[in-house]
Image (cartoon, rainbow, N blue to C red; front, side, top):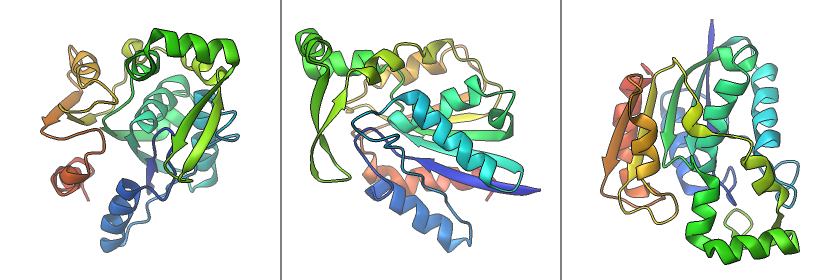
Length: 218
């Protein structure tokens, strides 16, 4: 049976992100393709978690049937988690393992942390938020519909059976590492690694890869 590996990038990022490319190179060294879809769907301006999940589901459907291993970075971690949960009777049942890197499990709390409650209120009232898009290296706007869509998902209510490995930096200023601590509690299938790093975890790629080799049985 075929086995596939999919990397899911984060918010305001792209398949060209440094971490995505670092993992793609390491998989390539072992002769394994790493699929890295563009999750700015249907566009960054009209982005929703639901659309991202459907994009990944469509990718899975396009591949020969087999086990699917997901690597999710930041918001990509939420995409991985909710695809496995919301589509557990469809594409989600193919998901074998999840490696989550600083997963953004509470989008609303993250935005309040970065924008303050007043900033989130301004986003809601105007309908738009300007953010720096690292993939396009330019300021882009995103609609408030993203927040409305995200609020229909509760990461902490998700219960999966698949093995989940989480790496999170304790100096992460974008996503509080305590979100991962909370998620890992009382979930015996979740292994949490707290490391001395920031949100990007770029200085931990070698460490993560070393464990990923064992985790994915590469």
